[in-house]
Image (tube, rainbow, N blue to C red):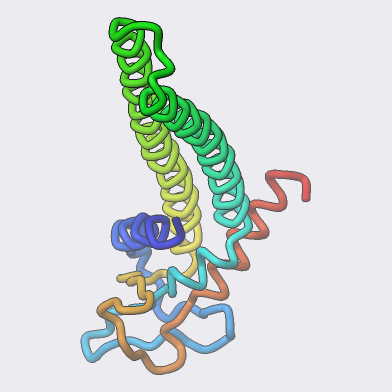
Length: 196
């Protein structure tokens, strides 16, 4: 989940790098933002750190996984019950426990219907999971882009990049990383809006 959320954050960060014309913004650590040779103010956010420290992302992730666990449990209970019915059917079939071939065929057909229903339930759960994940990602994306638009009015960055393990930003000198400042601001906004 975090990697999917991080992907959404990367997209959000790419879109949020707007300019406000400030000369030299300050990052949360108090260091002046570095500029490249053309005066462009470039900073980045580590999305792995952001997602593991942003209270809303943590809360949404926990709720999402709790719901997934409940679905898996429900599916496992139904699958186990069907396995037991299948084993009982096979035992009866091997021991000539059916009064007629027609009853054996009917019992087999009922099992096939239950197997198909279980397969449909599994697919429905996967579809719900994907929809919910998309909704959560959109919610985080909206919160982050909204925050970054306001944040950047004061900071005046030209480009806000994102980085995570295995991304394209492999190294940057001190002063470019605004992750902690953004996490702090997002969490303050979250606490204020949720009375925490």
